[in-house]
Amino acid sequence: MDDQRVGDLPPGFSFDPTDEELVLYYLKSKIAANLPFNIPHLHFSSSDPSQLNERALWSKNQWYFFSQVKENNNRATGRGYWKELNMNEPIILKNCGEKEKIIGIKKYFVYYITTNIHEQVQTNWIMEEFHLKRENEKLLEWVVCRVHESKNNSERITCDDNDEIELSALDEVFLSLDDDQEQEEISFPY
Image (cartoon, rainbow, N blue to C red):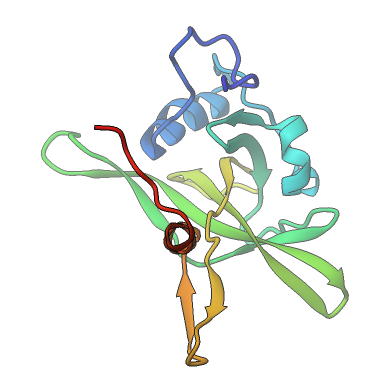
């Protein structure tokens, strides 16, 4: 299936930027108001994962958008909030002369749905928020965000001896094939 939301890319090309490209090419160009590619600007209040499909740039099951944030800004949406995981990762430009150069920071967030005042439910939605390395503190800062749903689909099953073993979906498929083979032999032509 082709990416319908990516824009005017030639056939066979897809939008799949590296972390360095997101910071140096897209974010830096957005700040300079010279962006040749159409990544939309969204407010966090409208960046609920269920609403991104209609508003953000979509490619390869990932959504991209720009936003403006304040330091320690609340990233609340209509149905929940993005909680920072405190796993900041430097974006390093390699092959920059003799030493590597830090050009930005990537912050990780997970989305929580608020069911009532005292109860929040963690979802599989992950957001990577890219910041350009700042020389001076600003009230508002542009960031570029990449959102995707984590594929952690492991389930718990119970064995005959009542020990719980965690299997992936692929393991369960292989185990179900073993059950099918006991009932019916599969033969391959020579």
